Image (cartoon, rainbow, N blue to C red; front, side, top):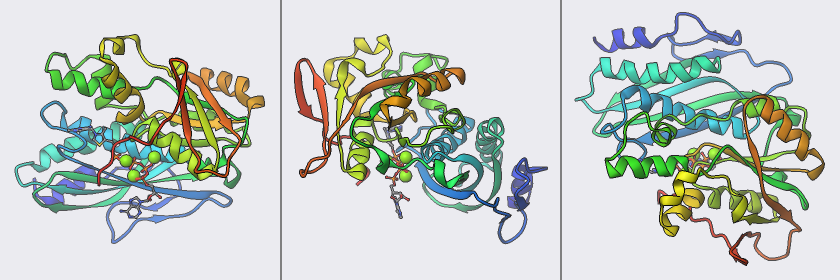
Length: 321
Ligand SMILES: Nc1ncnc2c1ncn2[C@@H]1O[C@H](COP(=O)(O)OP(=O)(O)OP(=O)(O)O)[C@@H](O)[C@H]1O
Ligand SMILES: Cc1ncc(C[n+]2csc(CCOP(=O)(O)O)c2C)c(N)n1
Ligand SMILES: [Mg+2]
Ligand SMILES: [Mg+2]
Ligand SMILES: [Mg+2]
């Protein structure tokens, strides 16, 4: 299979989004924007042996995972994902047939949310890395900023925390089968796209997605909103299996490993019960993990209440540089 055949084999036979005027096959894609909708654009890269390893992931898993990270960012803006563009840098030892599998993994996720592949670029280089740019649409009044938290809000998180970190830990212990729940959560995380539709009736939600670990994402909300957050350790939702970890590892999985791709945010207290119900209807559990506190003149902070003590929760999430 040469480069031309490769592109033919990943080119969609039709586009699910009627706004795609031109997809793959010319110098650029053409989109006809929907009147009254804003476009959300986000980009994330994954690099072999930094974000994933072919020792325990299939080519399909790699594709699925990098698209999931991008759709998660679209959801964290309150937008519905529509299209994506893939830039890929491939070492020579990876064949075009194997590359097609990466795209099949992406397509599996893309199809479940009716998202279209509209273009990209392929180059050969030493590192295996994949960059995706994802596009979503949102009504201007429904965008979900990190800066919208207000005094008195409930702080919430979807799903459970630490599953991905624990899955990664099990993979590194080499003592686990690939159908293990935690391994699957690490290898094929699910972006919380249905949260967007479930919460479209709510005026104000601040939102962020858990890529670096909630210690980072909560600090990002506190800083952007110029508020303090108080988080109750006892309320943080995590699976009981993680209790076999020592305290340091447990803290790390829950607070700072990240890659859970859950959503963390805040909403007014009056909306909390309904928000919980609406999420439940689409199969998403949300947990109240704390409160937004009045902003102070000091640097906005996140406080963690654990074992009767209140300490500042520093942003200890994954840092590339
Ligand atoms: N190399 C870069 N060049 C330009 N803008 C960047 C670059 N890296 C990050 N940004 C911008 O900085 C902001 C925060 O990006 P960041 O990558 O930290 O968020 P994220 O994508 O939600 O997190 P993560 O990458 O951990 O999933 C975004 O507006 C992003 O577009
Ligand atoms: C092979 C391998 N080694 C380490 C990790 C852990 N890891 C890498 S990046 C990241 C945080 C998010 O990064 P980003 O900010 O780029 O979204 C984490 C927790 C992994 N997943 N695979
Ligand atoms: Mg990013
Ligand atoms: Mg994000
Ligand atoms: Mg990051």
